[in-house]
Amino acid sequence: MMFALSALVMLTGCVVSEEKLTDKVTQGIVEYEQEQGNRLEVTDLKLEKSEGKNYKGVLTGKLNGEDAVYDVTVTDAGSDFDIDWELRK
Image (cartoon, rainbow, N blue to C red; front, top):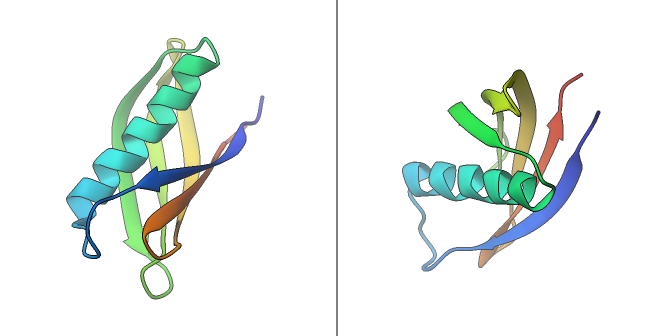
């Protein structure tokens, strides 16, 4: 089963620490899965800069008790970030 969703995460200020970004991305994905009736326990999220202020990474954890890996892309859209993720099969 694949999930792909774009979500806007509003962040205050122009400069966002990578730690705060990681927290916001994790929170957004967990909340989306909860809305879908799933339980996601995040083990780790590693984000690396890809272009400019954009990031790519991998989120690992357990989705409904099963190992899960998501590919994550974060695009800097100015005052907010566009977060896309997809569950690997």
